[in-house]
Image (tube, rainbow, N blue to C red; front, side, top):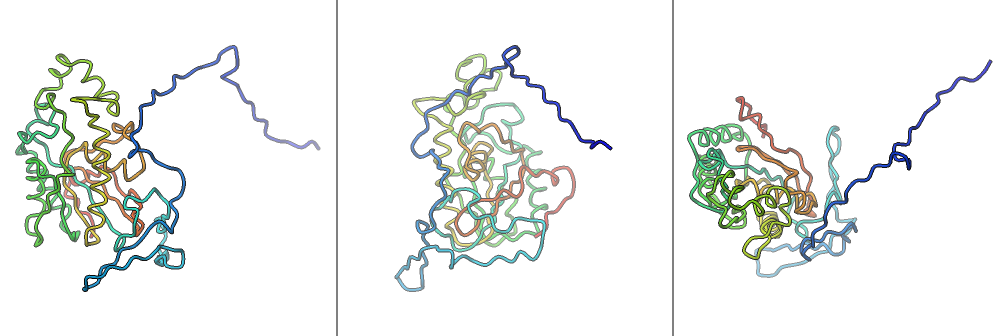
Length: 304
């Protein structure tokens, strides 16, 4: 009796007779601050600063024998995400942290399809206020140690609604302001495309190389996002809410995941959308939820 088997037939699509070539992506010059390394960060270079009630501060090195033990008795999730990404703090943080990111509700310029940037002239619409109320309801079971927010009106209004009834004061950070877009701000997208076709097209299609007033706004935003992460993660507490704008949210998410500004438009966040990150004591991030919007279309409440 013969031996039966499975024969795999392979068709080579890229033979000389029908080769296919793909254009290489156009590189852009990375700023020194934006360069990333594939090398693992040595444990001995991550330090922990512990302050006591006295004025002295002790610094200890993170070594394998000092790592916290993690209870992995429950299955279904990743518990030890050592070296998941590079550290956003380059030093130990006080404890693992959970950070919930929230985009503001629908604004007047959102509704009018205007470019907002860092302008403070756009405020929440009635729909935007209702969206903020939905976010408040959806998050009511979650305890937050602090709420960080952009001081720009549309985000500030959203934060005030969502945070209403909680004891601790809101904390406004300038590093959570939206990306500045200079003379494009306030223009409708249609007018901006017509009047400044070159600049508008680069902004929409190649934001990492978008230059205005001698600045690269997207690249600057990446630097701001890194600084913002460090400021928040080194703050006391284990659970934070962050209320801000879409572009800075994109930068926060991408920097946490080790993505460069050329990935700016690979992530989108709706008005009222929620994103959740967990951070280990090294300041390394794990994305747990991206653009969650169930609460915008139902009475969904997230568990505490």
